[in-house]
Image (cartoon, rainbow over all chains, first blue to last red; front, side):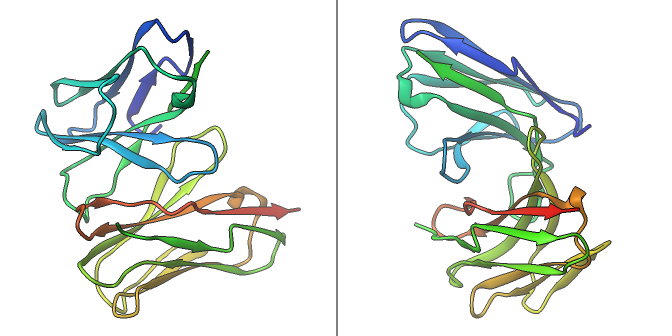
Length: 114
Length: 112
């Protein structure tokens, strides 16, 4: 048990749907992250939140919209996605957003966009 | 852009074999290097976080070394077991982006 949970674990959606991914951590961490893993590509950082403020946005399309209402919860709101957005979306948290802090990952949401 | 290379891409070994993988990264602006272990259908799990040149860390049969001057890290597994089968990811922290940049990983399969 890593202490980071994600729901749902699997999601199938059409291009016109709106859905949200949820991430929750009970580790007392101050930083939370969204990563994307597409087939045969490395993990790509999408967003970083530190103390509930977004500190990094890696040129992610606006159809992905993150929300961090408090230090324990992180959402990724999805709307008008494309089939190429199908991927595994991982959430992670760490004590801080500085380099030596190891990140704790959730199990991921496998997203399929039809 | 921080270019992270891991080799080999995949590795098949017999139970009891010892093995090692390589992670190469630009040595400029280095701050820290992370190693993660990712088993199929599970979450990536941190193995080591290394910051100092010459650092060597060990966890059971797994150890890692770091050379920040030449930009590489080795991960060693002594006496591989089937439960070591996983993808091993390295991720340096630093460079212009200041975040973890993951390599594609080395996929290890250990046959009983």
